Amino acid sequence: MKSLGSGEPNVCLLQQHSENFFQYRAKLFDPYSFFCNLLISYLFPMSRKTSLEYINHVIKLEDILLGLLSEALGLKSNHLKATECDKGQMLACHYYPACPQPELTLGTGKHTDPVFLTILLQDQSGGLQVMCDNQWTDVTPIEYGLVVNIGDLLQIVSNDKFVSAIHRVVANKIGPRISVACFFSSVSPKMFGPIKELISEEKPPLYKDFLVADYLTKFFSKPLDKTGLDLFRL
Ligand SMILES: O=C(O)CCC(=O)C(=O)O
Ligand SMILES: [Fe+2]
Picture 1 (cartoon, rainbow, N blue to C red):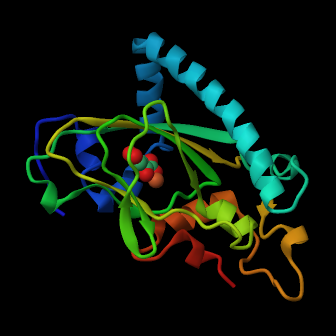
Picture 2 (tube, rainbow, N blue to C red; picture 1 turned 90 degrees about the vertical axis):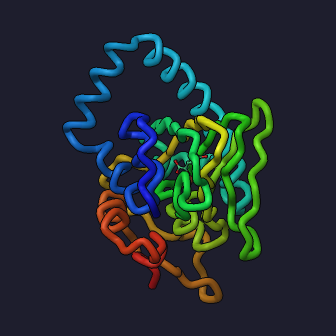
């Protein structure tokens, strides 16, 4: 990866490096970022109001999706919700500046999301790709459409019935591209693992039980070529 000093704010430049992407994400939890976020929300109260309004709508959609996903697993519709796997929400707003040499870099490197579910809003620029049958496939933007990603943690609790989406964002000469990802995960200090109702002699658990906090610590310090799933696979 090459650094492309385009004069845009640092936070956007970090998005140009897949190596830095998750370090940057991890930094969202540090006191410095916390302070910056607080400052931004006071400097731009409209953006705070709009973000909260948006999150509240997305949470309603996510409630419906969790119900449908539970039923798809053959469970009661309130099953996943009852595990509190969505109690924590994080909104990440991405800004990808136009890139003069897109062939030398990526917008966001290949990864799976270290959460249960992601609901993503992307503009019309394009660039998001998902790995499908070992091939990168464009996720063509649909106006007013949202992209829903299964994250690693939903793959684990479903004991591989659901598969987390491997995705990336390619860089683009035309820009900027803007996307808003709403991540859903647990904030409780409780153990998660393959759902008992999905386990049988024929389908033994494929993963160890884990705390989300431990999962994240390991996820952010793992080598980039490993997936988050490898960390807890039995
Ligand atoms: O910008 C995008 O479309 C995707 C961003 C993404 O994959 C993420 O935030 O995890
Ligand atoms: Fe992602």
